[in-house]
Image (cartoon, rainbow, N blue to C red; front, side, top):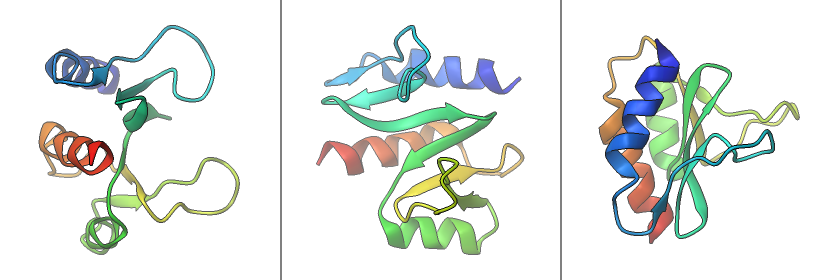
Length: 104
């Protein structure tokens, strides 16, 4: 189940320096992992969404592992990637990559 996979990811990463787990609530970012107060990974509409450099997002999209994230505004975001739940990409590795990018 996707929610359980995200919970496992939260359990793994919440003890990393500067990382805070999702908080209770319903607003934007309430289901997000943050590093130094900045979102790097979140669960949105049953998909893992991560912030990565634009070139990396381009690569993942070209490899058909998912799409650019669109926050329901009709404009795909350049540095946000929404992974296909069936993609053969390891969640932990991708989230750690996003954490390093955002934490710079």
